[in-house]
Length: 455
Image (cartoon, rainbow, N blue to C red):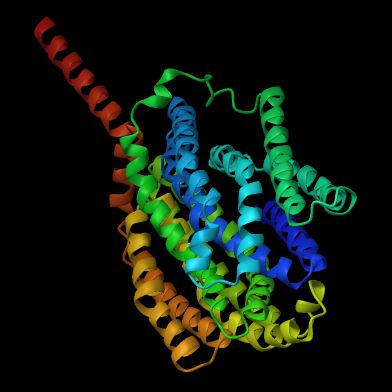
């Protein structure tokens, strides 16, 4: 999963690289549009798709194979329907940016990028569920293979569209969509010809339009939890556009977000792994193993957070040079990177804790923790230090430091207070095993009564 994450990250890094080569305004507008796309689209799709994670992982542990295929189909249908209003919103976003005080040139570039990113939104409504479907069965090789193939073509596609066809920022957006289409097609072809999911896939059926309530009951709080954290990072890009040096601040934020996105691959992969492990063990009625997996993952996350902080601090003077040679942007980047490193001390255990909560079907708890930490603590501090105290970009990041510290502490307390036997019982109910066990018990009792009457 780490390798797959690094390959997918490469796509974003290459896109930002080509934006930087087009100019300061294109880099600022592209960074802003990516932030908006994440806030209003990709975070929603990603968050809703995680609603199937608890059901799929626990169903795999309980060997309820038909439930896995049905959950995949229902999730794809739900996400595709959600893409329709999001698309309409993206097509009419430029006036909103202007009302919010963004510069006209940057707003125009951002709006153009969003319009050409619409196909990618629909591709993601298939890619995200397929990734969860495979990972919860401990099948990760096709994910890595498809990501590697798509990334190998991404830079050439960007070069052809941007320089050969002179499409500029539109070409970069189209290149992202084409790359994700390649990823999706490779993944689907692999599944069709490998036959690795014969047990869990019985083909499409009209049942995908039924029984949405259990999925939505997990998907909506999962979406809220993911969005609350994801929106915070992207809202910082929007806030940076309101600072005095808007173009430099937004461009710097986009570059730093690339650094955090690179580092985030490691806790995210740990989160995905522990979610699958905890879900599988709870589905198999192994609460002690689920607890062990969560504690090991949390320990690894704390260790990796220290390494991440050292990486951010060490790269403060050289990271920005990868994307631009603008002196003002490089100075802002060097000043902010050590503070961003402090954020990772809380980000790693917090992200891993979210994975444990997803695997144990408790997304509502994660949403409540994220809401209180990021918006009850972090947002007021960021606004006060960034604008009231005139600390600018640095003040925004200090608000995130406070949010991550509170969030990580709350996650650790939640994990330590978990009753894993109770969670195993909830897993049996979620996958239908409790009903099957009751029916089996009733059948045995009826058999004993019949034997008694026969005697």
